[in-house]
Every structure is written in C-alpha cells, then in structure tokens.
Image (cartoon, rainbow, N blue to C red; front, side):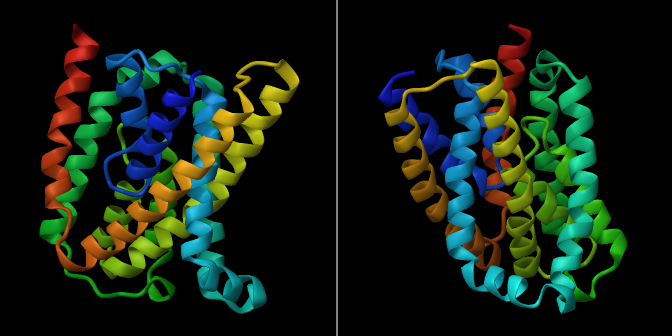
Length: 255
C-alpha cells in the first residue's frame, strides 16, 4: 500500500462514515473501480480514526455516562442495542463469505435510499431516547448489525430506524454515533488480534499514522456536517446521491 492510497482511503472513510451513504460500500466500490488495494486491517485502522472523532465530539456526554453508569438510562439503552448488533455481526463474520457480502452491495445502497425516503416523509416524532420504547432500541441494534453488509449505511439506517419509531432527529443521531463506539472498538480488537496471530494484513507504519490522522480529521468534519444537515435541511439530497453508487455497483456486479 502506498502513502497516496492510504490518504485516499482515509478521506473516503472519514467523509462517508457518518454521512448516510455507507463507508464500507464506498470502499468496496473504490477497490473495484480504481483497483485500490484492499486490506481489512487498514480498513479497521481507518474506523479507529473515525472513532476518535466520535470520542472528541461527544466527550462531554461520554464523561457523564461514565461518571454515573448505573443511574443513566442512556447507557442502559446503548448496552441493550449493542447485544443484537454483536450477535448478528458474529454470525455474518463466521458464516457469510466475503463474495456474498460484495454481491449484495447494490441491495445495500437501495435499502439505504428507501430508509431515508421513508424517514424524511413519515417521521414527525419528538420523543427523546431515554423515553422511547425498548422495541425501538432493540430494532436499532438489529439494524446496526445488519449494516455490516456493505452499501447499507450504519449511521443512516440506525438514525432512520429510530426516526420511524417517532424519535427526535437530533437525539436519534446522537444515539447512533454513541452506539458506534463499542462496535468499532470490538472490530479493532478482533482484526488486530487476527493480524498479530496470522501475520496477514501488515501495512507500513507511516500509512497507518497518516490513515488515522486523515480519517479522524475528515470524520470530525463529516460528523458535524450530519448533525447540522439533519437539523436544518434533512437527508433527501443524500438519497438522490445514493442513486449514483447504486447504479455503479449494479453495473460492476453484472458487468
């Protein structure tokens, strides 16, 4: 992997991780269209960079959760939502081959489009996360687990799911981004362990450093962009944009 590749992939990951467009789907497309080298461990490194962006943006909320963990409703909901996510992600990792995941790429993009359109047109909710139903929390965790399939945006699908259950837009976004923390941490640990035990996926140290820095910076920008756009303009523009990667993925799949 070259330094140029690492910068390109880090920018792509950081800018698409929090936008409702699927970072994993865009990485797969980049690898197919421009022969960008694929490296699972480096992908996880980039996720770690975007995780740092979440920790910085939500540092006050996280500190509040850790200060009073047993009396905070939000923390309990985050833990409950994480259970189905980890269960589904484990099943997919153990039993679903990589080529099957790639083959479902157009379906993932199409599903993201549908969820955005539904949430934008049928949600008028103002319910807070701490007062929502446990069904909404579990459903969000299930959707996040299914979002391991490329093309289905993790942030987009979880936020739209919560909005369809009548939750406030801003609180849905905050919950979704906080919910990404345990998932990304777990993936970093698993992939790092696999690389250490098998010796595969080794990447030059300077590519790792640059990747973390660039994905953090671009992820920080994208995270704040999503929070502002969701509050002021909505997401229909993202649904329109997703038609492009959907078409490209369908063409490359059946070419």
